Image (cartoon, rainbow, N blue to C red; front, top):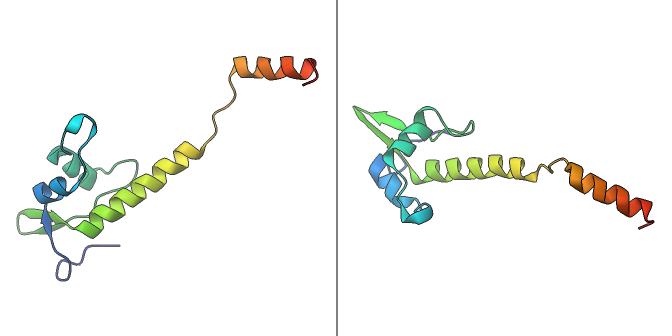
Amino acid sequence: MSIDPLSEELLTMPQAAALLPKRRGGAKVSLTSLWRWSTRGAKGVRLETVRVGSSVYTTRAALRRFIEARTTAAGAAWAQTPAPSTRSKRAMQELERMGM
């Protein structure tokens, strides 16, 4: 999806940063993070922006889409089950040997 600058309320990057929840320790999301998300992306997901003259804008809907896409991408990584460690393999073998 893309931003429709004529029907959506445009937000400057400082306005967009102010809408986001604070990070650990109470720090605000930095403008640098927003710029990076819009230019390079984060884990393959980019924050949508539009340029009007020399100013760059985003919208609440674009922020929502970015957060949802990042959450989905992170959820896929969390869903992967790590390989059992050597210690847990040994424990399972010992339990099997004991008949449990």
